[in-house]
Length: 235
Picture 1 (cartoon, helix red, strand yellow):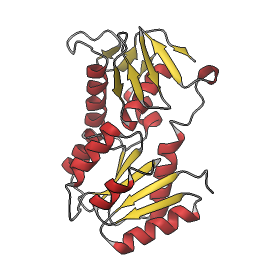
Picture 2 (cartoon, one colour; picture 1 turned 180 degrees about the horizontal axis):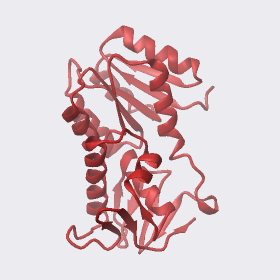
Picture 3 (cartoon, helix red, strand yellow; picture 1 turned 135 degrees about the vertical axis):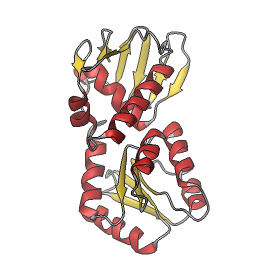
């Protein structure tokens, strides 16, 4: 059990914290539950969760701001749990770096399944057994969620950005359609998924120093999808 993934739960409703913790622990996960953002952020100094369930309606902090900070500073998968069911709320959460969005009320079994799906992807075996990919002078460390430029500068990757980059690096010089992205990255087909994917690709291009008008590595094939234009080595 000590090697089981750790799931952090942040929700100001005690009944929801208990419901989620019970479902996750029955499924073999470890949990740490918090009712306030300040408690959660203090705990992050001594623990490294594999995934975080974040409620947006927090009493002491803007939930979206917290999601954005986690996405830029942590390698944890981020799933929003919220009563806000509008499409724009979902889009905003995904654009700020969340990996998934679950609306209340929810079935705990669905949350468990979504966490398993999120954690399964980065744990895949890399080609030749490595977790560091090298391409066009760059390297990506998927254990540390770090991108290193040809000049040696390091840039952190969010969990969502790492998933997307891994998808491209696993299939270099091959067309990846929107349908394949949906199957690989998970989510719900529709405008919110498409917009979230576009934002993640834009962020990846920025971190890779790409010219948005003429990207060299992640090329858009209009009406078809995207293609990663570099050879990739794994170590």
